[in-house]
Image (cartoon, rainbow, N blue to C red):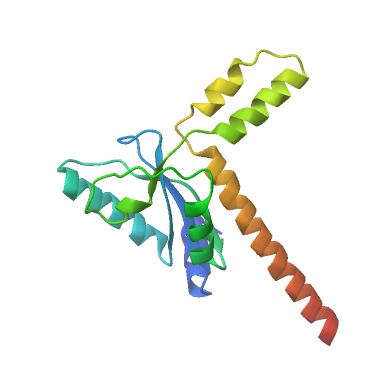
Length: 163
């Protein structure tokens, strides 16, 4: 199944996309959001920011997952320790949902692994300074995994109850 068919399938059954957007134009910043129609949303964000700043702006998807409770996930992410607001193009679509990115937690894990194996510690600094929000991608994945687990357990319980 190609990605467009998968996108349409998830949208058809009512799941919303939880996504993380990045921009080469605005390095070390990312946008976490939700949308029922992801492709239309990313085009809207790109066009809106480009219109406000007056030049073409690169916006790309770093990560997306179909989730059950997208609104609750988005609120949890915006309230977490990893969130440090970065205003981008005030007046553009979704401009309040951009934040700064520094991979503190992933960098710390890499540092601990390097320390444990007595390797040089500099890779942890490189990981921390990557302009891709690895911390938020992992956090978003964990929230989705928790939801998938709960849904799977509910289906398993229903199956065992009736069959």
